Structure formats: structure tokens, C-alpha cells
Amino acid sequence: MEVVVDGNLVSAADGQGFRAFVMGTKGIQEQARLLDISKLQSAINAAAVWQVASVVVAQKHLADISRKLDDIKKGVEYISRFLDNQRRARVSAIFEYLRQLRLALTRGEVSDATRHELEACERDLIEIQEHLMMEYRQKVDAKVEGENFGTATLCERIEEKVSDLDQLAQDLATCLKVRITAWHILSMWPGASQLRTARRTSIEESIAAVSDLGRYGQEQVQAEIDDVRSFWNREETLAARRAALTDASGAAFQRLSDHCHHGTSHLQSSERILLEDKEPVRMILHLEDGVIVEAKQLA
Image (cartoon, rainbow, N blue to C red; front, side, top):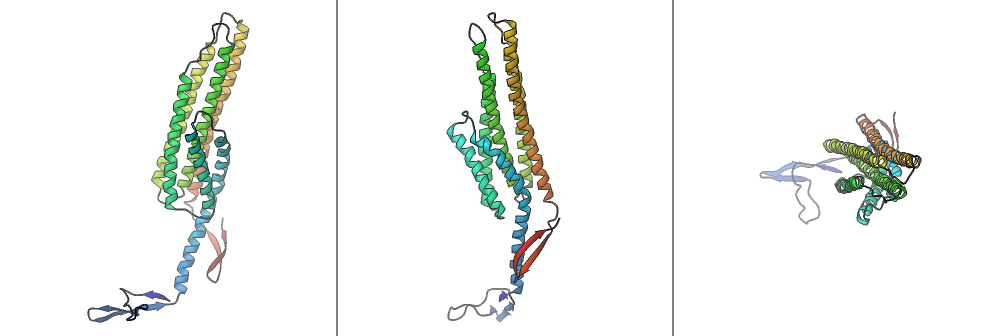
């Protein structure tokens, strides 16, 4: 039975349970009302309905989150030597944590502790991102030195520099993708609208900063390529070497631009899914003896 009463029930004289009344200054103040548990069962059913609804809503996000994690996986596996072991381990650990969260979301499990952990992930990722951007700029600004005779060694070193910048760009892209995925998961918590907006703005600004850094790098590297000259090489040889380096650097910096474009696309696709959550979720539930045995979502 469900007991409804205003006040504390009186304890039984033998200490075994309570009497069904409340005492006041003038004697019995109120008798307890005993209700059939069918109403209580309805409350339990309501809680079960909300859990099912949470799982249904999560399904809208899981496909997009799964695609993001699959896209990130290869980038995490090939993080470059520019990150030390500690930072490399942190990126890998955050990625693995997000994979675990995806499985939990599949079952409709979302907790405040998880939200706090996502904040720690964001701080770590921003730190690693800033470290990579500093490495990138330092690599760009470090002028390549050549030999006294000819340009073969100089061209090899410029090509190596372009390759290093290309790998740093890949690492930056991986970091941004992990941040976007963590942001999407965070956005599923109720009451996080202001934080969600602020974090989205931060990620957009980071993508723009990486894009600007890429354009700066391309200008600086191209200036070095244009300066490939030597009295000991024929002009045809120099032109061919400059053209090959220009093609290689152009492809590398285009990949960085593509990474930034993909990051923006990932943000926009997640935002569209989040906007869909504002629409009502309509379901048909099949209950047997107060237990939900089947749930279908209506279009």
C-alpha cells in the first residue's frame, strides 16, 4: 500500500513498525490514508517511459557520434612524433573514454559525473591543441639552410619541412575532431545550453585559427621555395625542383584546409541533430502488467 499522511507516523510500542496515525498536542492529529499501489505503479511506469524516451532521443545522436569516432580512430593511431608520450597517451585515453560513453548512451545512461569528466577532457584537448599550434608556427618560422654548392640538399630539407607540417596539421585535425565529438556528447545534457554555445564558439575560433595558420605557413614555405637558386644549377633544373616543391606543399596545405572544412561540417551536422531535439518525440508503448515490452517511435 502507499501511505499518505501529513506528519510522522507514531512508532509502535514494541518498536516494530509504525501506527497508522499522527499525534498532535490534543491527541490524534491525522489518520494515515492507505492507497492501492496501482497509482504507485503508474509512477514507476512514468519513470520507465522517460528512460525509454531518453534512449530514443540518444539514437538521433549515436549514428553521428559513431561516424566521428570512426573518423578519429586512424588519426589517433598515427599521432606524430611532435607530441611527447604523455600528450599522445592523453589523446588516446580521451578517445577511448568517448568510445565508452557512446556505449553508455546506447543504454540511456547519462550521469553528472560523466559531464564533469568531459570538462577535464576539454581542458586537456585545448592544452594539446595550443602546443601543436606553437610547434607548427615554430616549424614554419625556422628557415631551411642549404649547402654551398647546388640545391639538392636544400630541396630535400624543404620537402622534409613540408612533410613535418603536414603531420602536425593531421594531429591538429585529430585534436579538433575529438573536441567536436566531446562537445556533441556534452550537448545532450539538459541545462547546458549556454556552455554548449560557448564551447561551439570556441571550437569555431580554433578551426579559424588553424586555417589562418595554414595560410601563413603556405606563404612562408612558398617564399622559401621561390628562393631556391644556385649558380651551380641550370635554370631548367631549378625550375623543375621549385615546381615539384610547390606541388608537394600545395597538396599538404590543401589537406589542412580540407581538415578545417571537415571540422566545420562536423559541427554543423551535430548542430542540426541537436536542433531536432526541440521537436516532440512521439512513441507508441506496449505494456504488459505495467511493464514496457515494446516501444516504437512515430515519424
